[in-house]
Length: 183
Image 1 (cartoon, rainbow, N blue to C red):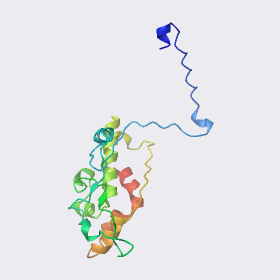
Image 2: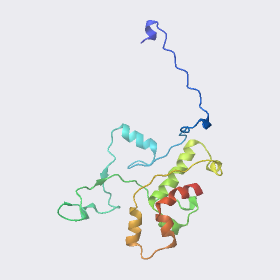
Image 3: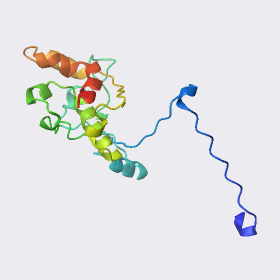
Image 4: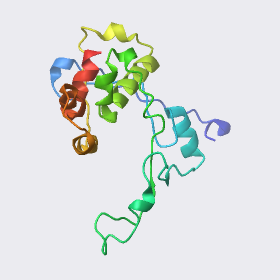
């Protein structure tokens, strides 16, 4: 509107001078690749499309996960019951390509799905960045991973007939960053 009245646009401020890295303070960070999987979305593109369409990504517990009716009830009256039969669920969690990541099928079976996901998504993020994964080997690239919940280990402890050598590396959350850096 200002230009329509003949007034020149306001000057664009000059970019601040680059600070030398040795000056202290936070280091610059650039996001050059991204990846993600969300309930009902196999990738970031479908996630953003569904969010823009105001779609609800919370669904009833899928039958292949567990029978929600076994746990449905009043938690104030019965132990181990909940009034919820809803959640956010990832699909294809069982489609991990262990051979691609040079992991034996036996070891993959004991891997927490969080370990599988970080490997798949990190690979996708590197591809999205346009870098060859091999170009990062030996570089000063950092691997930082935040993870929580140890429920997969609880399932292994409850249902595995015996402890296997792969149990500790497959269920230890601190190993996730190591798996990624090894690749």
